[in-house]
Image (cartoon, rainbow, N blue to C red):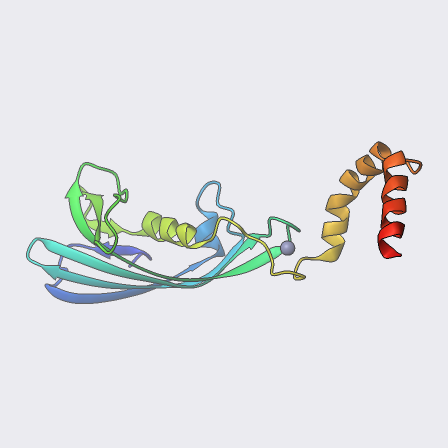
Length: 180
Ligand SMILES: [Zn+2]
């Protein structure tokens, strides 16, 4: 049985091979600390093998759902990533090396495995495609959730600034003068 995100190396032909997989909620849920709540991601993998060289173009497209930083409601984020890397075998774990702009990255795989397992790479690249700031567009947040979340800090503010605050009175006076 063929496993998803795994490319068997035995009998892999020279030239181009194409694979495609889907990454869903269960896929992202299988990783620790994933804040991806839901996903509908299609992964297209174009592999080129030529002698000892092996290059992979990964197209990661679809949407992921993460909690909004402001209202904590579901926020759907489009993902459209194209990542190109060359495969090298060694004792290093499958990590991604830093490279110059436009250069093909090198990803190391264990030489003891009879297959390339791209699960971690698909996960990493998808997470990198999600922006650091995750908030709904202006006005898109759930107003009820916002009101609930900010109610505590409002109470504190009311306590700190009493109604008969002299500065507030001064502000009112200045405002009236300006208006005249
Ligand atoms: Zn929101």
